[in-house]
Image (tube, rainbow, N blue to C red; front, top):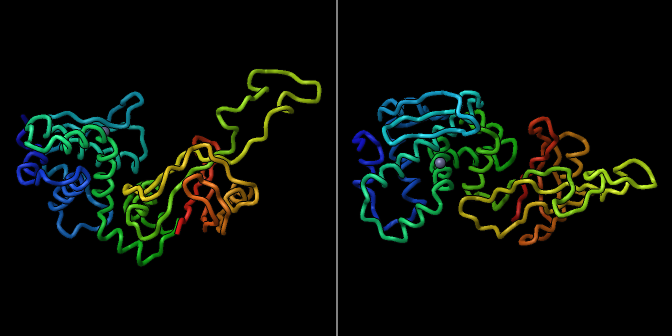
Length: 289
Ligand SMILES: [Zn+2]
């Protein structure tokens, strides 16, 4: 038992008749309350010190971070600072689960199963609320406007990755939007002759390959998922502003006709080129309303 675990005190006063989301969000608020009037970037180290959490940067062989019930947090030493901050916030949320394991609070079974089944997503949500508390974050988005540029400003102010700040912007629900990473590729189901070194009589190995398309690699919805299912691998046409961004390597915006299965129509889209492990990607903010 670790009486210092900040979540133990929190759980003692937490209401059991709540949702798993609320439990995590309020726990993040509880941690934030030790730094009143916190400004961006949120000072996680002060919170950690207050609750006697010990933080170590070590090699973790492929894992981002982990925490132990006796209040230790281990972060991958080679990760970027923004990634380490997110990992640290995530592990601070994990202490709520350590506390639940130790205390067995008399929560209703539905709440306990929600917590168990969605633990990682809930920790991500709590971590976002810790690093980008909703009230000031929402006010900043309202002031600066809902755009990729605002996402960049807030990422640097909150010292988080651009993906993290843009995902948090989705959570403000100021606009109904999704965030998508696109990659120029074949779909996984397609037969690619050149990949199995199958020759043909017309030209180089790639000659008979089906054409590559710009396809969704990852898609992010708001945590309140008011948008229907959008499958990965869905491709966009070469006349879209998304494709122009890929071709030109610069920022684009415009109205694109997109068929995203659950969402179909002409939508305003902002796109920027990004590089992931040296590979070209496009990051798009797709406005659905
Ligand atoms: Zn976790």
